Structures are given as C-alpha cells and as structure tokens.
Image 1: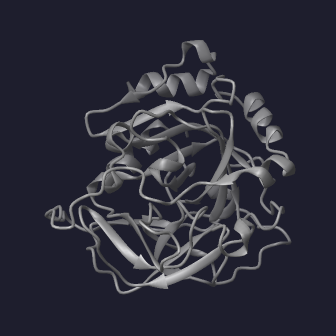
Image 2 (image 1 turned 90 degrees about the vertical axis):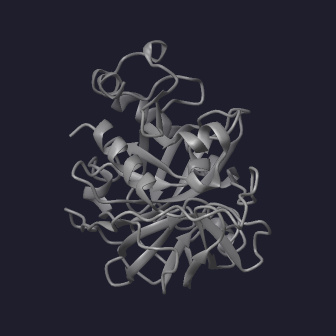
Length: 326
C-alpha cells in the first residue's frame, strides 16, 4: 500500500484515483491530503491554491481546536506499556540563511508553528505543530486529533503549517501538506494513548524549499521513560496571546494513566499538537520531541496530557518518512 500512495504523490494522480486512506500492519494509517472541496493536493499548483485559500482573514477566524478529552478515559490503573530500548533522532539546523526576522526566544522557536485546516462541516480550525529531523526533511509532528477527527470522523482538509507564526506575520512563509498520517488506534478508537500525527509537506515557504531545510528540525526521542525531569512545551494557546504568538511552559513529566504522560502547564485551546521538548536550546530553537499536547480534562487547570512516545511514534515516524519522496 505504501508504494501505491507514494506513486500518487509523485505522479500527481487526480483526486478521483486517490484512495481515502491506507493502513499498514504496524498500526499506521495515511491519506493523500485534500483541499476543502476534496481534490488531492498532489502537485505544486494545487498546493499554491491551498496557500492562497488561507488569507489573513480566514486565518484570523480559524477556531483553536479544543484540548478537552474527546474520547473515553483510560484507566489510571492500567499497566504501563513496557519500555523498549531508548531511541533518538538528532536535531538538524536549517540549510539556508533564515532571513531578517530570526530572533529566537525561550517562548519562540522557528521549528514550531501554527497549523490551519478546514473541517468536514465547512469550518476552519487551528492547532500547533513542529518540524522533526529526517533524511528527507519533510516531516511535521502534531497530535492525531489535529489531522483526523478520530473515531467516526474524517481527515481534515487544506492543511497548512506556518512556522513561527506571529500576529499575522509569516516570517518563513507557509507549507502545505500533501500526505497526512496518524496512528490507526486514534482514527478508529480516539485513543489518547496514540494521539499522534505526522504531516508530509510540499516544498514551500519563502524560498520554495523543504520545510526542514528552511527552519531546521527538532530531534525525536522514544522510550525515555514516563518521568522526565524537564520538558519545554511550545504552542499557540488562545488563553495566552490570543493564539497569535508562541507561548511556553516548563515542567517535569509523570505517568498520567494508560500510555500517557502529564506535565504542569496552563496553556489551553490552540496548543494541541505542540511539542514537548527535551533539552530545548533557546539559542537555536531546537530540542528533542518527547510528546505532543493531546488533551486536558479541564483545560487551563494547570496541567495537560500527551501520549507517551514509545515504539509507536517511531513506527509512525518511519512510516511517514517511507512515504516521503526524496
């Protein structure tokens, strides 16, 4: 199935020939990204249409996606999934000069951005996401619920990533997805244990290049344990800065029930999909993604949960990288 999907991307097959989704035996599912009217985004011309769709007015009206729990709660007494060997992908710096607007602060990384997409009911919504390093340099990591509605739902359309968006300014331009991936357990069952998604991006931005070449890519870590002394979460919550600028919180993590981790943080809606970074370096804006914002039972109460990054995120990462053209 993977080879079929890749062919659709490379050859730019029309939407009518693109299957809605395909899955592998390792619990991953993918679809060709589509426009709000159902066309497959398999070439640069359609990607430009998507970028043009997202006018400043539409971006401003996009609703920050809810971070409340949207599926059945996992039992807090459920046994933790045994850890496998700890693994790491190293971060990478951008390959180009970053332009004039490159200030990096603790609260802002050029690898983190705001995501915009259309919903099946015709609305517009937003999340947070971040780039991750890979050989093909096209991957953006977010929550599963920022690419697909979950059990009984559909994939989102017109999916666009704006790295280090700030109050209407797009310092590195925009990047449009042409392939979306998520864990099958999220798609079929809305499992918060596997609320993970990865988008494969078209070339784009201010330089017409790959997203990781443009802004760099965070590292990735899995099986590093539930208790991590310090992570930095970055995202675009509506309760802080009105969703118009990156915000952050820092905390240790602990087991939250099921295969989930929890941290102290007061960010709410819009921060969904934002990275939890180990060893975040505020001098270069890079760290190691260890989870993403998934949900909170009472957003704004000072804590939220993310999926524990075990072998499942590595499987999804390999799946998405395998689907990416060079």
